[in-house]
Amino acid sequence: MDAATYDAWYDTARGHWIGTAEFRLLSRRLLARPGDTLLDVGCGTGWFTRRFAGEGLCATGLDPSPDWLAFASAKGPPAIHWVAGDARSLPFPDRSFDRVVSVAALCFVDDERQAVAEIVRVARQRFAIGWLNRASLLYAQKGQGGGSGAYHGARWHRPDELLDFFSGLPVRRLTVHSAIFLPAGNRVARTMERLLPHTLPWGGMVVISGETE
Image (tube, rainbow, N blue to C red; front, side, top):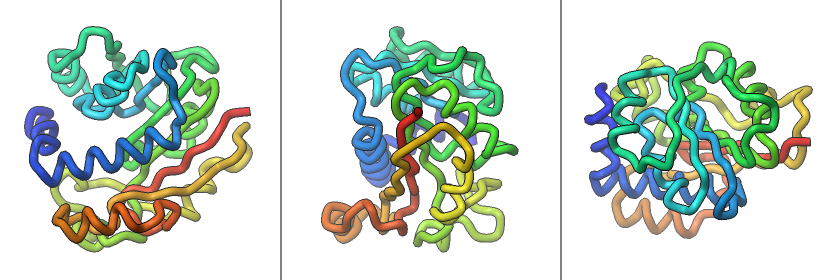
């Protein structure tokens, strides 16, 4: 899938609803304030990076794909910094960013444990990492048999597996939340998303968040 096609999905009614629900969960877990610095690891086309920048954060997006970074840069705004790099070896000093986020990007990284360690290393205060949830209806629809569409080749994890990635790292107060319980995006799905507590581990995207020590 090319960058323009991927980004345009967020302009559809279902795509915008899913993206906004995921953004709101990530934003609540980051507890960011205007003026905080934020790194988006695996930013892709920059859809989430732009949303965070729109909340007043000093955002940087990192991705390994020059083509997708070029698309993100052209989309703007100019205040966002775009950096080519590998999630397994982030080109930043320790504790470089107040907040670090990653949205369903580590699912495509060969060594997820190393990428998690790098996110923790460059985070000064808080981090929130979203993964595709194997214990979800979305997995039943899109993840089986190697995955379909934008999910092709992605790894899906159960929440308890994800907590193991943080073993031995200088983190505290880890929490597990999820979003997108019914991925259809219809009225029933939107109602359930409002009513169900996001501490339930069954949403299509599961978020592990916490603080660095």
